[in-house]
Length: 122
Image 1 (cartoon, rainbow, N blue to C red):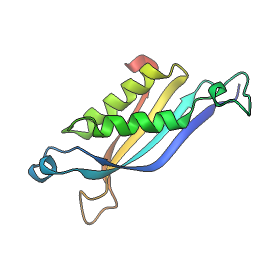
Image 2 (image 1 turned 180 degrees about the vertical axis):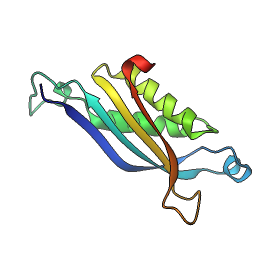
Image 3 (image 1 turned 90 degrees about the vertical axis):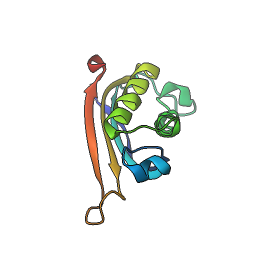
């Protein structure tokens, strides 16, 4: 059976994240890369978005989790986003989620953490 994936590359969010003193005082841009392995829909109706997983909803959840409250660690945000996506969308089988902080170091494009999980991990 074919495998369907939904992805976002470098989704930029002004997030409340960080444990360092300067990070506690303000927001910072994070970049989110995500690949979702999903159950391939058996029937796709080209005129009905309800027959597929609407990636606008995925984007909204990622954004909501990143701005909802201050999170100290990238690892915590990775887990909260993954858990919520699994909870809200039974079609998701696997998540490959990476969050980068582009402003963390001047000699690097970004530094971050990646979490690869399946539904049974949570």
